[in-house]
Amino acid sequence: MGKKQVLVGYGLDVGAVANHINTTKGGPRNLTNVSRTKIRDAGHEITLHGYTHEFCSDLTREQLEAIFVKTIKIATDFCGKPPLGFTSPTWENHPDQIELMGKLGLKYDHSFMHDDFQPYYVSTGKEEMVTTDYSKHPDEWMVPMKHAEPSDIAEIPANWTLDDWPPFQWDGARPNAHGYVDPYSVERTWRDMFTWCYEHYDTYIFPISIHPQVSGRPHILMMHERFIKWVNTHEGVEWCTAAQMAEEFRSGRISGTGK
Ligand SMILES: [Zn+2]
Image 1 (cartoon, protein in one colour):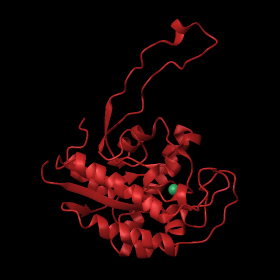
Image 2 (image 1 turned 60 degrees about the vertical axis):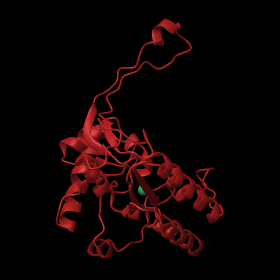
Image 3 (image 1 turned 90 degrees about the horizontal axis):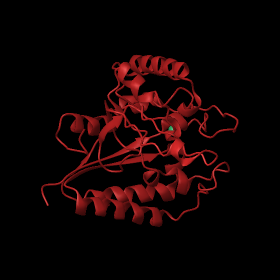
């Protein structure tokens, strides 16, 4: 095995923290606030996550483009520089999302799951396939898929197992998010994921996604503190933003899965 370079980072869903602006379908909105000014002034990356946490998969192309244009302007005015990336709310995606992101100058996406721990250039989303239809003769749907080309958008893959919501958030709309998982169980899972990567890759990324209203609870904060200390015992660990992960990949300093 060669020299290790492990890029580890936390993404905080502050767009969702305003007591569920619209993070789950069907629930009434409850508008409170979060101080994005403190986050910006502390030097953290602020990136795009919709306007009110809209599900991209439910939008038309025109709606999605209008939301991108508006939120890019808001983030640029607020941060003094344009945002570089986008995370689709709840990782629900639109087939034109990547094309629009390229058109509007964004550099990376954090919404797809084609890989877990390696960055890659995500598909343009223009794959074509014929859906299996039992009512028709198989010759009509046994047709090879037409692959799309890779885009120029770097993908920092999303990962539900490295997300605090399913184990730690009671969510009546989602039966897999009951909120009462033992933090030591999640911590052990994350350690095993990290250890497997460390044993099998020289370079990899480890992007964790959390929500302040979920991970802000004392027993979960303690889990993060233990995990961070343990990660830091490994040689080659660098804590960084998703934009920095994407830049390391785009510049060729980590290989990812390539083009
Ligand atoms: Zn979100």
